[in-house]
Amino acid sequence: MPSSAARAQLSQEPQARLRAARLRVTPARLAVLEALAADDHLDAEHVAQAVRAKLGAVATQTVYDALATLSSRGLIGQIEPAGHNRLFEARTADNHHHVICRVCRRIEDVDCAVGHTPCLTASDNHGFLIDQAEVTYWGLCPDCRTTDQTTTQPTDQTATRTTQTTDIRKKEPPS
Image (cartoon, rainbow, N blue to C red):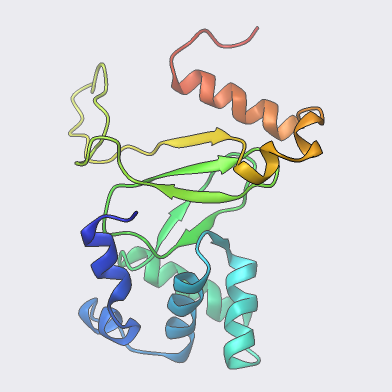
């Protein structure tokens, strides 16, 4: 369940969120916010499809511009999990993480394990003031655990993600 700050943010009207960020309210920006509120963790192409379904003909550049502006103002978030395109999400008011299914690529939000940012403590911060930690959990979703898909061989993308996860956990990298 999202934190109270995240629930408050997502319940706020898109027009009010744009105005609070000192942005003009445009049909494209509204449609992007509404698309992400309806179906989180979308790549730019799927956001564009949702915007076009609502508004009709909209230039791809218009959607990219809206995504960039909304992201730079903190109204939407971005994640770039290994093996995925950049994905956009509506939830930005808290430090949350993600769990991704290796088979079907389903992505869900996971609340911060500690409850405050950065959620993890680095063993050596090298003088940085750390204010955020990005954690991605990888595994199998309930649907994929109960299907025959789980018996398939891992893909090259799965192997890459496993290596990155291993490196993050500070275990010895594979030879």
